[in-house]
Amino acid sequence: MYVIVDDRSTVSESYVSSFSHEGFSSFGVNEGEFKEWIGSASDNDIAAVEGFLLGDFDRRPVYPEMIRSHSRAPILALSDQKNLNQTLELFTAGIDDVVRKPVHVREIVARTDAIWRRVHATPASPEAASGLKVFFDGRDAEIDGEPLPLPRRERHILEFLVKNSRRRVTKTQIFNTIYGIFNDEVDESVVEGHMSKLRKKLRLKLGHDVIDAKRYLGYQFIG
Image (tube, rainbow, N blue to C red; front, side, top):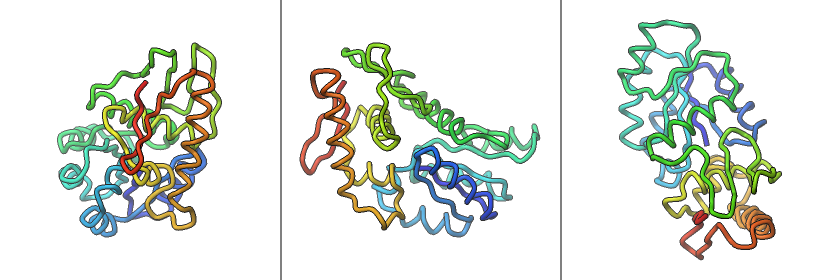
């Protein structure tokens, strides 16, 4: 799930639409709404955030410190124009990356995942001994070099599990990441259906489970 902070609703709505088109959940808020949300969000909500995108507003340099008191997710600043002094100021403030608009959301996803892997010291293309290779830029996973076509949500779940392979993630965290924390139209139990289909496809191709499921505790990619 991606969080877009921008006082211009047309900007945030455009990104939310683009993320949705690519199969990623997101929501857009203005400055005031963001401060209220991050101060009251649950641990599960915060854990579902894969990246914060900060639009062009005056108080942007103080946001990294505010965000870091709650989350370690990558923080990207979206720049309307090239400005060296502004870019240096943002990096000094703790922004992880500055991206010049227009930018495709798949590039944003690739950049945030690269930052995540660097911070958590995870390999760029995690591979199981079975030959499963998972990408984080919209490409299908591969098994022994052959593409494994998956529906967008199943692919995103697999990517999320691999990215968090060092810890077990709950059904709620997966749901919030895939569907977004403000989605009241879909029940959380839908994750079980996605997971069942994903595990069956992987087991059919690999001959064994690479996703460990424990009731009440959640799921973990074990390779």
